[in-house]
Image 1 (cartoon, rainbow, N blue to C red):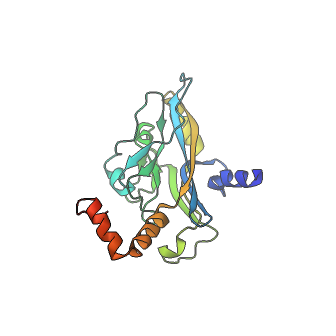
Image 2 (cartoon, rainbow, N blue to C red):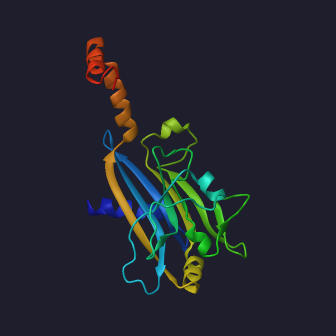
Length: 220
């Protein structure tokens, strides 16, 4: 069990080169028939004199394509104690196959970094040194199948960064860098909705009419 936990914890950092670290990531691992494990992680910055920095993952609504050109949206919380360098995508639907799930926050701009206009999946400093870039893995091997083939397959979204340049920029502005991790296990929402729809198809006309009567003519 301990070996399995250790393996999961190290997956986001797999195949990193010397001097690289994960700026932010989401790890998705399905198990059983309907359960799934998700782990979010991000680098955060806090003032050097802060004794109790926040250990949370901030979230933003929308998608990266909208946020990047709007210079960042509204995070789920504001704090004087710290800030996430990456925020998690939030909302009623997260487009797993169309978005990056985590993305650099407005705090990255405070450190002097900007996305490349021709390729916003890469961030650079004022001298155009490469600071952070997006990577995505589908385990065990990406084979170019259609998205439906990847349903309930382990997946990793991450932003890799030049950790020395990140830490140097933070220190020059009176901040230190640390990492926060958040994990959860829950029921697969897509499968849960599918099962509910299949169950509804099996209802008899009598059951449907009874539900309409119970809700004043509105079917649940």
